[in-house]
Length: 385
Image (cartoon, rainbow, N blue to C red):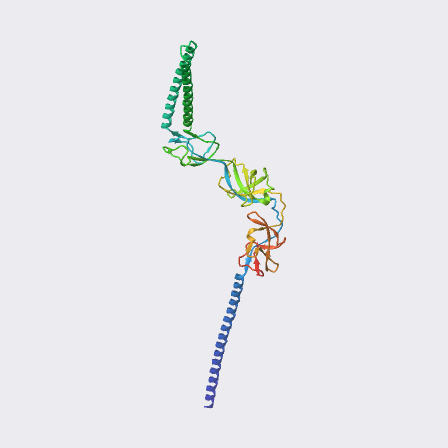
């Protein structure tokens, strides 16, 4: 009995030990899982914090301030215009018999663009010719009569008064004949306008006429619009500070979007004699050869004019300007990424860049598109190029 009791006690102790082991293993697993979860959650929190920090960084683009290397050129905007443009109206009223030229056609001076049928004008001309013939016939009779009376006056067969009356009648009929001839010439010239011709060589940019259309002399929509496109003209407004440096004959370079990288050469041909008091600019005309038709009137163009004026400051993109209540500012980034707002004094603005006379120095890193909320002392990150 004693041996059996000892055996039961041993089994009980073994069972208890195995249970404790299982419990211990379970506790260890729970603790390990909790620890792993805490560690993972902590790593996620750190990653999230780092991501939030990255998102909160202000990334900016900068340009290094340097001396104006393009100060020998003024860059301006312009619109290309035709050297000559003529809206062509009818000089004779009537019906369009036919048109000969379509939009886009190149024509030379004197080319017949369309023909007008004007029966009323034809009748007027015929009547005027008849009236002229009648006036000349009456004039011939009056001249013969005056000549006879002058011969009769030599023999006192007629009075001087009667002779003067016949001479005066002949003179009046001569004037009437000249008036009749002038009316015939007027109508003949109008008849010539039944053939509408091009006043100069160029290109037809618009046609607004159809066969059978009734047209009225000097009124209504132009039948055609003709442009002389070789050369073409550009008009630019040169600032007062630069106007003294631009002269008639100065060279100009023209660029258009449809021909990237191609430079068209032109010259200044005319300049206004005075500045516009509103804008303080001088209107300047530039002519550009265009024999191949590469430049289209109405196109936007960038014009560069040679300028001998010495640069006074640094050239910075005008997008870098911050307009504050206390005046214009520019944001400069220091070596440690801190922003300092500098008060600047400005010179000329050519549309894309502005001349900075004071406030920044060569080598300063200037933010090109500063946020409106940017403040002095903010920390930024400079974008890598």
